[in-house]
Length: 443
Image (cartoon, rainbow, N blue to C red):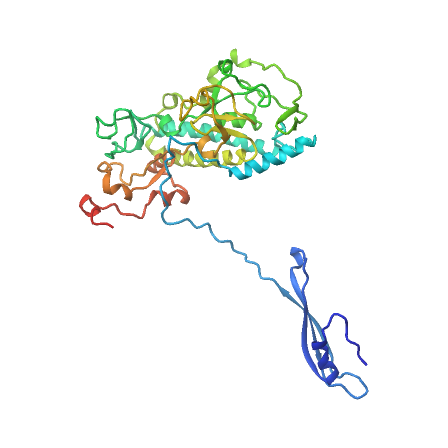
């Protein structure tokens, strides 16, 4: 006499008692490792039952059903065309990069811990210590930053760049475009046409500077003491705080973490006087870190070397952008919500230098919020010119057929470099610009 196992239902066990059965029972595991990710199946094949209860022809087998895993990853697909970057209004505060609801939730949790007298848990580099895995990234970004400045300084000898004398418009071509979109103070006299002059490297790489701090967790910069601190490129300051050692710009390296309860620092290891070795140092060693006078520092390139320099510059631009994005995920960078001021550190400075929207209500103080990569390393979008030596680009109905690209990408492209695929959708390379008469017939 056979007894029904407890794991088998009565409906499955009933054919056994009648005489013959051919069934399959599967048992699936809920938690399996990656090496043994399969389902186990038990198969019973039974013949006829004799009167004495013996079974003829019983077969027991266990089968493994391997889970099919995709071996090929899908390539990152970029859209055919994308919209041009939006122009943020100046009469309004910038949007928060982090949702305001999440900011309030984090502040509420910190306040709850502070009321209970519990220290705020901090991980490097939020606690003042260096993140060891980001030190090589910082050195790589700084080296690529130097290559980027040198490459652009040489390419501007052969690639003409024009900038508007009245507004911030930049155009990379042999002549300025004829679009009537100038927003300068005297644009009404020129019917909104741009007043083009020869551009420089600062028109391609927008100079974003920040105060250099020996101790980012130390004393905050006041309006009266702002001249005691040097202004250096924000990318260089970010690399210094991430572990790059520059003798002219020393930085405090803590061995013990700071302690905080809520928003109050209860132990920062004491205040240390800031050394000033750069006063007697040779300033020529810091020239490579700044864009000022880059075209005068480097000689014109040979015609055969132009494509190579362009490709190196393009690769350096991508390295800087990728490295800054990686560093800003861990190191705090603040930006004003109204102007272009940037501060590298856990909190902003108190210098009253903001002159943008409603600055009188804030007594000139900046409205600090978390910075984005585009605020620290602006792409500075310009119109993409398919034929730099052709006729100037026209506005009006033809404007919607043109694309844009970052200024560095446009310069390198015209110099013969291969650009990444992610920039091509915004450049609208597959759109044919019609004639002025044909543009009126396009829906």
